[in-house]
Length: 431
Image 1 (cartoon, helix red, strand yellow):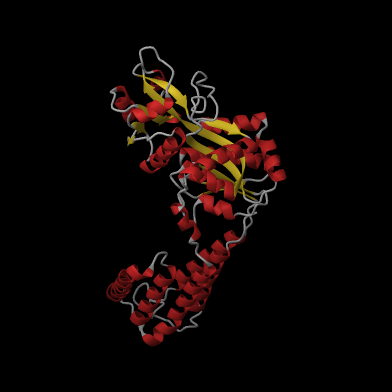
Image 2 (tube, rainbow, N blue to C red; image 1 turned 30 degrees about the vertical axis):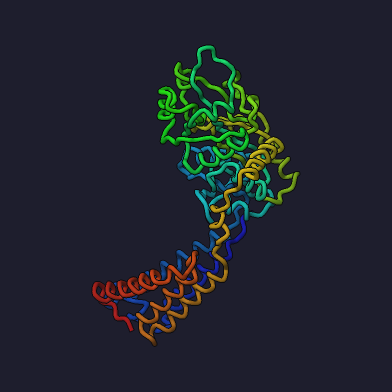
């Protein structure tokens, strides 16, 4: 069950208290700091709306949600729609709807971080993607092993290795091909860096790379002989690209041969112990019991549920590849071993550890209350400048030494701008 967000609750309750005190005129702010929306109009209506909004937020924060699913995809994204279909299947079997929370990217509000902090009571599910939060799928697998318990692999979009067509289509000399010239990649440059490091380490050769903006450009360069070989995601290759006369499919970066391409060997069969691709996994937060994992897998492994999940993914352009918890954990361990050998990317996780603590929330409330009490005595400009400066120092996430001049300048400018706008445009009288 979802826990009550104590920080948000305290913040909203503090704002409600200030709004209530102001609306009751306890601080005697008629026409002063509480302001006038227009000349001589006391903003009781605005304060009433603030109270109602705050009460709604408090009610929703306290209202329990039995099942939650944290998704790394946007709600309108194709993959997000596929996750919504998965939530429907789980909710139908559990007898209660599953609330989907979308948290795209990195940081304290990402789905991976929020999911890792969720209670492992069998009521919180997390969808994990191999392409986030770091550009290294190997580092992401290592982090997932430490933070989550896998239930089922939902999809796997492996890279296909494409090479030039030779006269007799002789056997592939994989190390020689990788070292023959630059390899073309249809991927983000940061991801390509880790893929090349993994290829170089496992193949024992120096690998050069060229990054292209799209798969058609990679294939065009391969056909023209500008690159020695190419790695392209399977989902980005059209049916015609798989039977092109200017190149041939050499290997697939999946753990086993694909059902749709049974004649294409894996990299492992060619002597390279490596899997390359984009994976998506359903998991529990770390601490979930084996019984919880087994029970959920027994539900999702039913033929009708597997068909529903597969259709939901296939209908949104995603290649389903369903695996059980043991196979998924083994896949993660193999990927994490690569990360251990070539080095893990941990820089993207620093933002996750910079959480907004309870002390910062209390400090914000204290500053706002002090401003409301001191402004009639000291005047608006000194009180507001002090409040904004201290607030910025409390909430600034990075080093303060270099940012202090900018913080001071922006704080002073914003306070003066607010003062001029309200005094000149709305005729508000500040103390």
